[in-house]
Image (tube, rainbow, N blue to C red; front, side, top):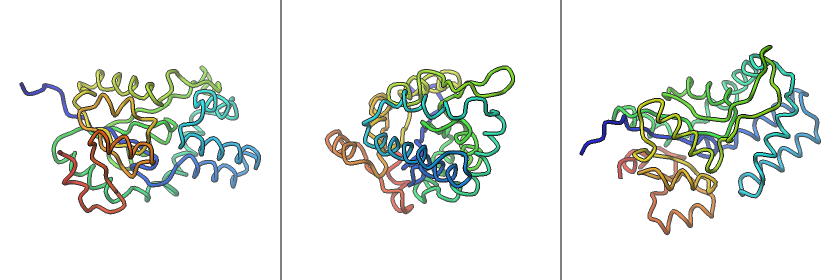
Length: 233
């Protein structure tokens, strides 16, 4: 029986849609702008390295990082992020990612960013690259529009990423179980295990081994060659 759900294609951001870790680019930007110290930047870079290896309590690390922005205007940080993204990230969309997005749009699928990054970056990336929606972390602001330093739980990571994706799908007439999901990271294994079409993009070594065992397609999006042909396998 044909599903009544609109097909969804979820896309991770870092090292998937773009080959870079945009968290690193943001930390470098904040250090240049003088909004964080050299020590804070070094600590953030350490966290990012451990995150890539899935060796960090990300919930705790995120809380510590957000404490720095306590009292900052939500709208001001949103505006700063948009300027940074358009200058330093927008042009980094991988050729294979662009081809995959175009293919899904042509099929009438909804393309949804699913990322552990900030809601500000997720929103501007979605607008810039023409996706249909985004799922990310949410930073709590008070009635005056100032960040409290708190993050809404569950964070958009590991099993929490799946929970948030399922919530978005339910609200928009879709089904995670019938979806595509493109990612590079072993931390996304909970989501990969529930979608119909897991797609592995330039993976870390551990995810490459898992994908090979399970027969999941492995893509290289540094060029557009073969990006579309593998989408519908």
